[in-house]
Image (cartoon, rainbow, N blue to C red):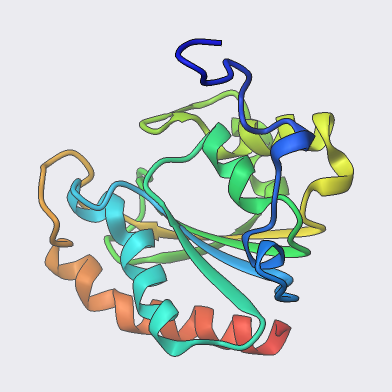
Length: 179
């Protein structure tokens, strides 16, 4: 311990809580917007989450995570279904393109790096090996092709910003079908 703060990571079972369950709600789906909201398009997932939060979709908890990696585990334990929305930068994509992915799509990149620290697939694999009974049964990813993920700006680039309403609608449809 240092200054009364435990040195153990928060992802151990004794401290894991489903935020909705902690206040007595039965919410089984989590929409998690991931990214850095001050690095232009890296904040696309956060922008989507903020818009979806305003829709108040029944049975869906919407949260933001301005990082990823091990912090992700604290957010997703206890949910049946998790949808993660984040920015992605690929070689052939066009800014604003939307990719629907599953955990299996990341199998070849599980040891890759991330500007957020430990990447999402590695964190999920760790969670599945440490506390498999607390992990969501289903995890979907919506990855938004970014143009700029390095310059400091709270604004999305024009092409990504233009794509956000359509992306929100698509994810809203998925959430309403599964809720």
